[in-house]
Amino acid sequence: MSITTYAELKSAIADFLNRDDLTSAIPTFIALAEADIARKVRHWLQEKKVRTSLDEPYEFLPDDWLATISLRHSDGTEIKQVGVTEMAELDKLILSGKPQYYRIEAGRIELYPEPDAAYDADLVYYARVPALSDAATTNWMLTNHPDILLYGALTIAAPYLGEDARVTIWGSLYTSAIEALQMDSEKARYSGPLRARFKL
Image 1: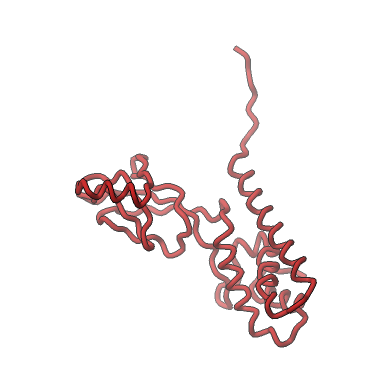
Image 2 (image 1 turned 135 degrees about the vertical axis):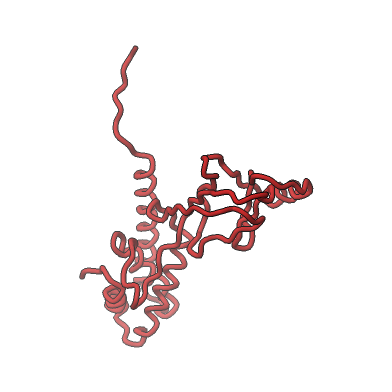
């Protein structure tokens, strides 16, 4: 069975479950699987870069933000991430200028020092995989790794199935698929063309 659209995914899940009474719950299973995937998966296909203007002490994060990879001024200067304690110590200095440090706080980026002008910066981050729906029928995860969404949704359905031996199998396949995806991302990130070595 081909699984390339949201409708085909729902149909495949229904076939695997073989339960007529769970049809209406399948979209919830998919949504909960997507939430679990958002917590576990960090793949290069999730990486996004946005340019923003830093002109306030707090800047809102993108709606699809999961984790920051880097924050740099447009000239390439890194803005370093610090923790709560370090930021509290910096705040005591009450300085303004070109931001040098940041921390993530309540869905926002807190900057230090407070910007004294508008500074262009590039935020590189991991973005949430776009959610599937009847209107948004596919995404890169479903196109390239439909097994993750299938087995993730089937695993979420476990409480409805009771003592069903298939749940353990689905859970194992789900875990293995995520591990393979992460490994694929690492290989893609660090692999490159072979370089000849010459002795001088």
